[in-house]
Image 1 (spheres, helix red, strand yellow):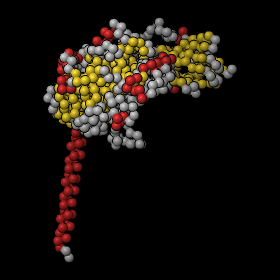
Image 2 (tube, one colour):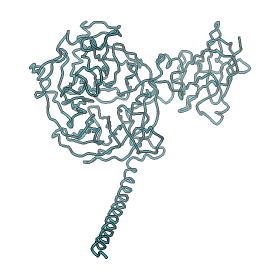
Image 3 (cartoon, one colour):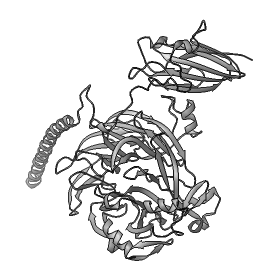
Image 4 (cartoon, one colour):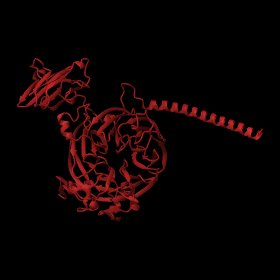
Length: 620
């Protein structure tokens, strides 16, 4: 018998038991601590029934084309607001006005919502959005949370990089992701550097009419432009755009657009450009005033930045702008004061596409080693910055004055954008930050191969930062902004406007009018019936002829909060929503004969099921 081997085996077994005991003990301790922490965290984010959140978070819906509204800190989804894509639940894209706004587009790629500002702070009047897929901008009225205008923008392709707003909402700017030839002309890619242009649009909001117009555009080099920001404080009047593919590659960008050591931040004086345009220094392209900074120099400059920056962010005081290169472990802080001095002294290190490049050493303040894959930065009210690390799957907190890293927190997983309370303004908050992550993996219950994206709620009120909550997001959020709830003053019920076009307020005034093959129905929706023609034996029935065009002008005469009616036509592929006190028009072609029930699609009362009628289409 080999005694030594037996003793060795016994020792091995004992060692294994000891390791198992340690692991088991540690596991139990971890679970106990984690359970206690989770209880504390749950208390932090708990909003009791009947109580309301402190903040609204306005999140882009990416390729859904819609706006998603969350409450913070609960992370509850409050509303999906249709913007760039049809929405059958509300009939957006079905009724006359929204159908005209969408203009036949079936989808949109909603990026980068931006809330209107006054003196550098969110004012809660409106939200602006950009559509990467179809070159559009939208105005969302925050009194009603309805999209009121969509603007199609010529000369650009893919306004990806944010509808960033000037401090008093004079403009919001839409630089383009893809460079294209001006005038929608065909030009081969061999002529890319000479004939393709990146164009930035200055869009002017009209707050009185809840609408948008293009003020002018700026012709820029054929690069790709990403997340951008407007100056404030001493940088007020300036804007900052991040760029990539300054190599001007036209194929395999993953490799060819990462050749240069640096790309650029485009620093432009929008106040000066606006004056130049007012003085007539522009050419008209596709009906838009186009300003060329090469023809009128002195307003656009380039600042070298780490390669492939995915954003640029201006500090709350406006004294610095921060750029992070996706392929660099550092984020770079630039001094606005030094940049303005360099411009005044013509301290340039060369030019690119005819635009002067400021000397890097003359404008940089500090380079901060934050980690792998830095992308976007937000701020609090204590002089701290927060940057997402895509590769490290972390959010890092660092001090703006010293550049010292204070803390890091893991998120799940691969964060892109992030948003702090009022984090893009001159007066950010200091309690919450949300990391908008690109990947969820096993974070939630499995729903098959495709997982939702995730959003992590981070408590930033203390010295260290901590994830205290999480919520799924579908589809991927492309940026968000968080506004104090008391800045949003909503309209709960539409005013009773006796002069509103097509509105009917009294049952006795409901009627059906025919003009040739055009039929106009002036009706009402009320609890719990439709009335289309009060003088008819069947006031809830509309009888038309095959081939007629039928216009349903329906007013919701219930003016109680949250009493919304819908009107769906069974078998006719139509539905729309009418909110309290609202009038909407739905137009259909009665192209098939038959008997088609009409019913209310929004639960409105105990007799909701009885709120029905008929569309009768007589055959030819």
